[in-house]
Image (cartoon, rainbow, N blue to C red; front, side):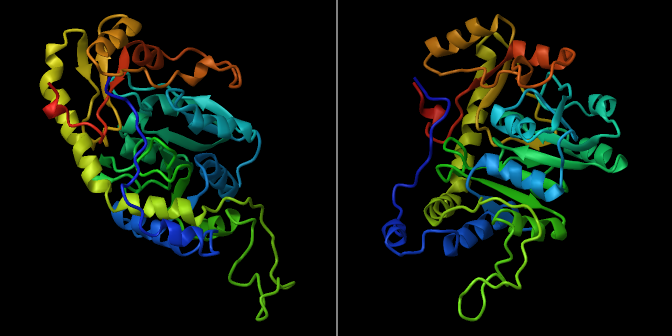
Length: 358
């Protein structure tokens, strides 16, 4: 059966042994090189900051923005739990916005209904690598003095109106480099801040609040004149993970091309599967096709089994977070119910050439 997810790893990692025995395993040379490679790939002038996990990336955003317990964040429940659990775990109130049932991402008009004086942030998840309504949601945020985070947990390399996510004008972008993402660092994440003051603060926040420019004196001793005056955590990425990520970025274009070629194969052949009523709407977007999303016109479990019987490990991927009691009970959302009822994901990953499938 063709897998829905698979971790990528380069066949050769020529510098790995040297790094392991270098005595320099903490964030350093390869961390900087990986950050530069990501930034160049995205095509933005702002620099990506890498961290040791996706949860750390979310914590970095919360600390850097100075969000406090009770602050409200509007988010989509049709997201990976890895995107939403860290928010509520830090005492923030997650307010669910409804989604467009044809795309699986936040409905801009519904967001307006949930803005209150306590709202600080819109957490814009790009479901399964399909970008949402970025311009519309960013405009709503600007009109209400709110931040927006583009949650690209599954959407690295996806494009909106011809630009890669991270370079589309959003305040903050967060990426996951966890095992089944592209690229992966076995575990890790990255954050991009458009505002330079937030970027500079985040550099210290991910490193225990320390200013490395002044932390040690001329003798290499910790300087008593270098104050720690902001909260911070140990979030830096180690050199081994950063090196793996750097090597993967060198190959990312060909991997994304293969995924998009697989998506084209699905587009040409999906009509032969009469249980499929539609593919996910891609107006203005070029997904990374982490998966190929379709909407089915029969009961979801039967649709999943139908494709599995054909040799494709189909899945619904995410359970709406409204099912989890850790989040406060809120009114049912029609778009979420409709989308979850019909959505399934089909394999489109770099590891298979569907045009050669017999």
